[in-house]
Amino acid sequence: MNEYQRELMGRPAIEAPWCPFCGRPWSSRHHIVPRSQGGAKGPTVTVCGMGNESGCHGLLHHHRLHLRWKGGWEWLMTDRAVKYEAALAMEGWQRLWDGS
Image 1 (cartoon, helix red, strand yellow):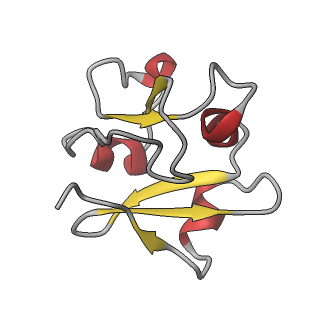
Image 2 (tube, rainbow, N blue to C red; image 1 turned 60 degrees about the vertical axis):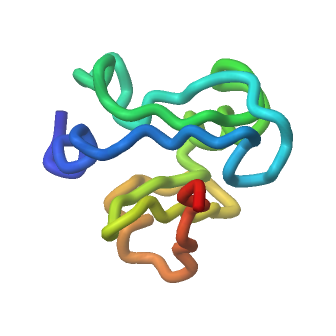
Image 3 (cartoon, helix red, strand yellow; image 1 turned 135 degrees about the vertical axis):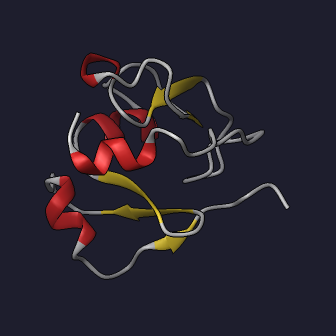
């Protein structure tokens, strides 16, 4: 687990009645910190798509959709795969729906 992932571990899960990125019905949960890197008990996000092949779930797995914590969850969509460290320096981050 790297320093960015460690920071995200204590944050709340993102539970929405729909995919918070595109508005479609959610069909799975994505571990924000990968289970393979110690995130099994960390926060998840409800997303559309299954596994790493389709919908916003696939975009998260393919490093085109990124999440960060800045006093609340924010997200960034890129047109190509981008490493997380590079995405953090990019413009265009949007505040995620927080349930209120």
